[in-house]
Image 1 (cartoon, rainbow, N blue to C red):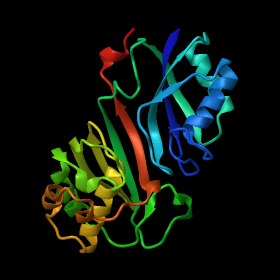
Image 2 (image 1 turned 120 degrees about the vertical axis):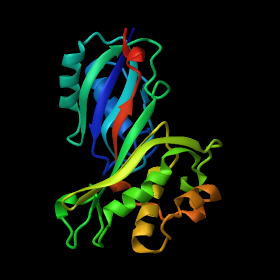
Image 3 (image 1 turned 90 degrees about the horizontal axis):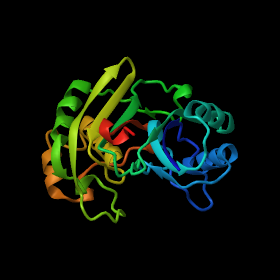
Image 4 (image 1 turned 90 degrees about the vertical axis):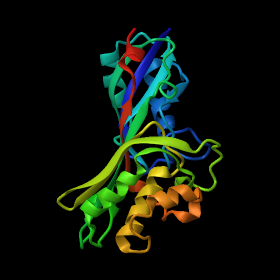
Length: 251
């Protein structure tokens, strides 16, 4: 028995998230279809996270225990032949039997990408958020720094979430501009349902003046979803980095 760690990337536009669902196409489903075709069995896979419908990933990690003996390099090539164009396997390595893509994860980095220009770009359709109104990125970067630290993020979690512990630690976050593209980035030890999208919606509310400046600490303290801004659309969100301790990966 081998335990493999696959690193994949996908454009989430047509998928209903990662996790397998009844009557909906998901990333896990098409990945397992390809694995079954190549490896000869439909092995159980463990994803590093659950991503919402429409969310993208430049780095997403999956662990799978399998009897398949195909070398990792050849497995990557074979899986990519079977996968649809919007999903790709980037790498594969053998890891200890105890390794679990989700439980061994030490943190993640998300980016939310905004095309900030007067005219929309059709090549950005469902890949970034179109926002035609001016954004003061330096100001919003300062505002975003109030998310850093360990906080109860109840105000930044979808109301229908069943999670009991809303405390998460944000290691770093901010915004930067590259031409017409504005990127919000955030790194932390874990994220609640819709947390990053509500953070972005709140910052856009501050930009528009519908939410007062310097109000993020008060919104956090409120521990109430209604205190924060709108939930930004899913298609601007990317999972870009998954963090593991290297010692957990060494056989």
